[in-house]
Image (cartoon, rainbow, N blue to C red; front, side, top):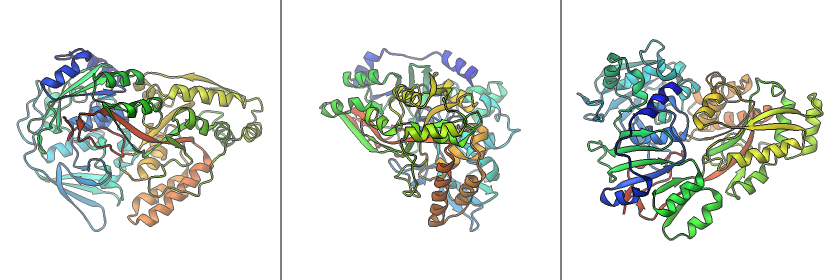
Length: 536
């Protein structure tokens, strides 16, 4: 993966302009500038798990068979006009939209519209080990395998050019919503064939081709991504002519660029800036309850964290309310469950681990560590919806842990390396978080905490616990929401009893933009999409 992106970083950026000239360019043509917080790990959302990757790839470049209605978690048709589900829930037939064009770029010219072959190519890449693209770019399809899609999908059959049948091994309640997630973005089989013949398969993940509202033009790592509006987009050309991601890692610099008019939009403005931004007549601030959780992941495969008493000691040692007060400035609540309070099946009756230094020391003594121990704590290098300041939180955690004798060395890495190393299980304690992808509890509990996810890396605690696994497996098979709710609530109790995480916070989400931005809708799923946005 890193080798591929070294190549990507060397691709010449076409027509780059100085940041200061962005606002002038916007007047000549509708160029929308988004000050984003990090570089994408890839331009193929099948291979990604982070918001920066999805914002830069699946949102502008691609479509899925189904999608979420803007600003909601309601599933609506997209590349599939409609779908049928068999009575036993094991067969889903998608009826595909006709005359949808893939992007024409300097490196690819399509000869046919989107059809069933593209659906088979996309999903079989993740499903079949012998697919010519399965191992390309590392071949890690974290979402796909974390949700057991490789075991759920028995076959994908082409009925005709505009009809595809998914045959499943079992019924699964969240399957249609899962198909609207970023990893299910549809690739071009024809582009894949072209690259295969040229023996340049990795370019599919570096220079993307989709059917989405914007065409990828160029990328300069840690600096800029440029797109142009797709003139043949099946839902109509975007009101914007160009879209620019001005990658700006420092949140304070992002805010200054917004105030100077050098960008139109920033996600997750620091809580310390919210009051001033709201008072600025040129700025609009949006907010909503976040479908998210911030947590401290504990690698249970590494001693001493294989001991429950040690994990519980961590939970009692951390003064989480102080983090809410100092870092979120009150724009969050202390988390006690791995799913947010806004999600159905949230268990109000879960008993949280209170802040109690004496209890923490008692548990450490019981575990055989009366004088504590030394460890490493990784803190997030970027601001995220669920954690606006990883470094500050790391420092506060470090101070709290020192009070019970745990000496934590703070470490961090570039965001891409941080995720890669975490997926490989190199950490002991790691600061992470999650924003829901589809509004279903399975998206948190299976993707982040299942045994399958422990194998492929999205379960950063490497925790596999059969009583928990049994509950979430039963919950995903049923279609009765009341029965599923009961199972998920039981699973939250089991999770809390075993403490593979210290749950930290559920935060509000914020967006700040210049007053001339029209039509933007905040997504409860945490990503940012700019189709439908206009500049006044």
